[in-house]
Length: 90
Image (cartoon, rainbow, N blue to C red; front, side):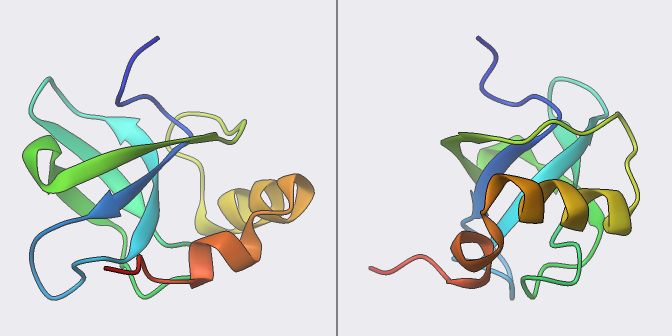
């Protein structure tokens, strides 16, 4: 099982989007992934360092480089829309 794979839900730990949840849509290399909030959370589609992410145990089934609409449909199908909207509590 890979910690950072396409479809895994993660929590950002750095930057202005810290403590927000996002979904990995592509693995760029061993240091960077492409993430998105799919219009559900406040996270914009961007490259993120894996050192600034906490992988969660939830994974959705999406293709590599999925659009925000595809990610949102997969989240609705899995019933994870509300989970992604809520920021992490300290």
